[in-house]
Length: 160
Image (cartoon, rainbow, N blue to C red; front, side, top):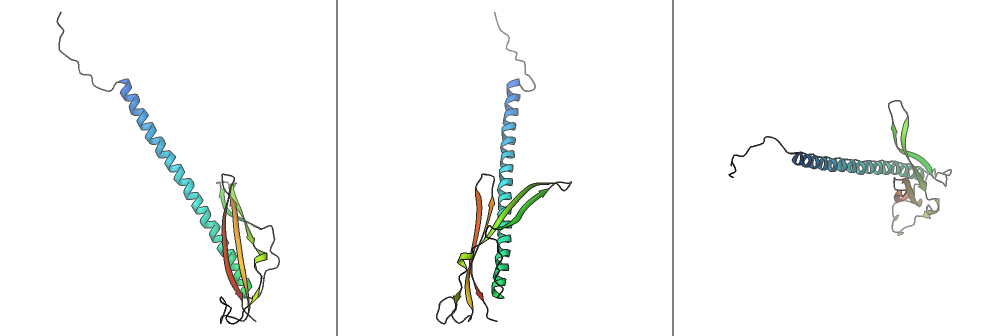
């Protein structure tokens, strides 16, 4: 018996080829989507940290200006000041996600020192008092940990 050498050319893809193509496309699109969500989460954390830093910087500048003016704040709460650093509102003005932070002012570290000549940091600057000012902002993240930013500065109270 002799076999005929005529081969039939099929046009199109087999089932295995099409399933393999679908699988490759699914893996690529899934990895792209995972990458996009990861980048969005990281960008959100960066924006949250930037906003928290801005709030803490403004609060520290506010306290510093009060010290310079000789109006040392007395009624700062020891447990911290609550501040909203992010809130997401829906179209109907329903708040869904709120990140709140606490700002702390370290009252124990604002011990005043009289400025004297040759005293290092405040020589020839003033004849007033120098305060060390430390402020901290703490906010929760999704991992049940807390993110923290601390600012530490010296502030000089100008004499009247």
